[in-house]
Length: 277
Ligand SMILES: [Zn+2]
Image (tube, rainbow, N blue to C red; front, side):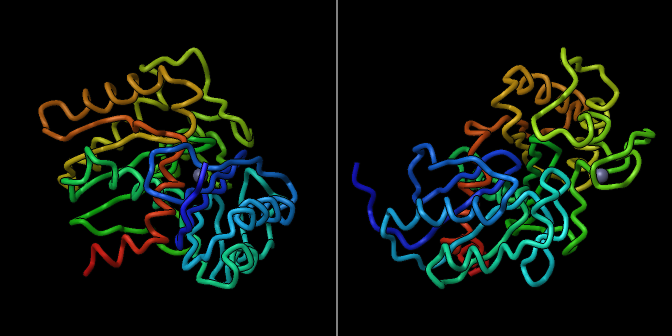
């Protein structure tokens, strides 16, 4: 297999796996395990990129944790040992000194889904990601809308009115009603019952947002859909029922594991600047 020389690299660092996306093909991205040791993880990614002998122009990394302004990890409940790690400078090393940016994984997944052929005509999209927690991202009037820096208010941390403690430290977050706290592997309570309270709240909140913002499409994605395929229909149907007669497209991703990696690649390639220009 010959891989063409490329200038853009998309990386997705999740709680358990990392993925590297190097082109527009629908091929499976390169992948490896995320370790408790962040430097070891980044060294493996660097080796994979070096082996391809790429001239990298820009690199974008989708990251599930929170980083400060200097690109250090300041919080990642799934991987506490990453706290304080200078992710930005290690990514710059991976990029051979070229521009390296870090983006929220929900934002990257949104771009990954918005660039899928069937979604390209929509300008107002909500993307819901189900992994070890619930992430989200939005495209409004064709532009990415990001949450406040350092205060990621994703769908998963909407207050759901329960007394369960979330991995973020708050009480009652929506994702805490659905996931057992502090688990690295997906631990959605099974068997999955669509009438379950946490799921009902997810459907309601998602539908409320769609109505409030007059969204054209909702896409559900994330690794959990790959692990529990029965979730696709349960969640799509649950949101559709809450939307009642409102004509909003609700779909599950065709590549739920790769949305964020593909989005990171598109962002590295300058997708956002192209949209604005
Ligand atoms: Zn929370």
